[in-house]
Structures are given as structure tokens and as C-alpha cells.
Image 1: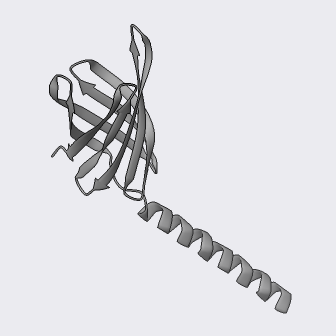
Image 2 (image 1 turned 45 degrees about the horizontal axis):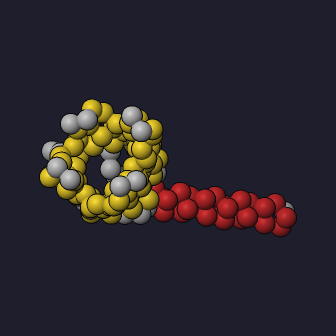
Image 3 (image 1 turned 90 degrees about the vertical axis):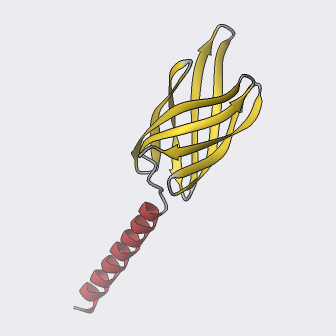
Length: 127
């Protein structure tokens, strides 16, 4: 009887630990799904694009739509951090653009890194 109670207690403890970890993980993932207006300064001035994000837990994917068409991306959202990578085909080969930002409610502030250098961007959630 004591052995059975010890096994039940151990199983309950394991279940509680897994549940607490899962709850904490879910709470650490910001909700970034939806449409965002993203703005950055480029060589030709201010560029505004639409960032559309689909989210499955901490995994994100979507598109960046702007003057040069639509560009797919994939990445992650954890804590208040957002990271994603987009790849654009150019006449000179593939260009990789890495985005990293900090989510604060309905706004994101971050940096985009291209082979030509880094520049800041901001994004506001579309209502």
C-alpha cells in the first residue's frame, strides 16, 4: 500500500511540474499574430511595409508586403523578443534579411540586418 501511494505521489508531482512548465512557456510567448505596419529608413527614404504574422506557439511565419512585392519569412517569438528571417532572390543571388525586435504590446522596435548593413525598424499592430 505504501509503495502504491509513493508511486501515485511521484506521478502527481511529475504532472504538476509538467503543467507548471507548460503554463510558464505559454505565458512567455507574446501574441504577435495579425497584421502590422512596419516602417524603416532606407537609402531612398522612409519605407512602409505590411507585416502579416501567423503564429503557432513560439513559431511564427508570414509575409512582408511592400513596394518590391511579397516576401515570406519564418522565425520565433519568445519572452518579449521576436526574430525572423526573410530571403529575397535578386539578380546578384539570394539576399538574407534578419529581423530582431522587442515586442511591447501593440508595437515592435528592432533592427533589420542585410548584407548592406543594419537599420532600425518599428511596427505597429493594425487595428
